[in-house]
Length: 468
Image 1 (cartoon, rainbow, N blue to C red):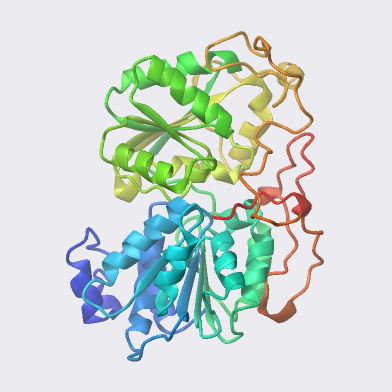
Image 2 (image 1 turned 30 degrees about the vertical axis):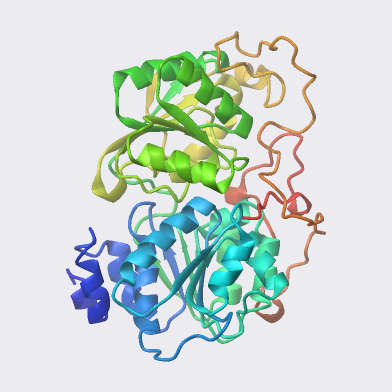
């Protein structure tokens, strides 16, 4: 099959696609769409940037177009959930484009925006609701939305939702869903805890996999540069000056670090901005819009931007800090080489990050080519200061040098602070594994089998979930 028409999609959807860049189905779309149109539960694995949204969105809309009556007040026919506001926004934009010329109503709800306005939009019901888990729970608790008639559930980037601690939220939401429904899971990686959820809550699912889990796009040129932590900012400056005017995303481990680095880059003459979980939804949208339109050349971000940013002009990704969760590396670098374009990804590895680098290479099942410096000897790596113990400053102090006036390091590792616990929520007790009532009760595990960050004790009781 080489066209969307060959897949049997509704003529209304085909007409809407004519006004988009979607001309030829990608492998994940070709394989997944027929199964979803037949009503099968599905688990889809594909690299970022390969068209997963259309893979579940188009066949879902095809099925909804067969329904001629409105959904009813506050009712929802299909629910799509994603872990971050940016990803929800991206999905909404695609689904909204697909529905042009059809009666299908699409609604988006995320945290950081007016819940009263979102409630008003849901008052007459919605065919497709796209939501972050936290804000959806808020609306459910207020009685502003009902999932009793929801026949379709899509979990996009399901592994990331678990990594962010959304397992409790998913379990709560599942109680509101009918047992008889079509469930779809899509992700670029598939750790064991996701497989357990799929085995428990999907009915005889079809597994569609167009590339090995954790495999980045083929057109991303990867490299690792070994450098002391305190030299990273100047090294980043060198790389950015090699490609003036080309869009780049720089990933920082912490929100404070992202802000600090962005300010340093602006001081050095770069058009840079930062986004992370502490920024309001409007701030994040404005910064992303400016980056998308070329007003910013450099976007400094935490892992909140590791998924959900689809900007074809991004040519470079810099892992200023290695990710704590190795699978996030794949999603970070997937922000470049979108839709078949080429891109580069450079990881900066300080001595204290050798373990993180090795964990990433284990996920990739290959070594990342060395393009600068030399791998740190293990005795040096083990002796290096760990996160939260003065690992240097963007301004370029000596590796591990304690900045003037810095308070003693806390026991919590750098980057372990939650992006924001749901408002009013209390730490949940560790759940027992069960299959109760269509909920999500699989035990929470560390993604990819990685050990928790030192001093973190990051079990389920310390959820890093955010209210969307």
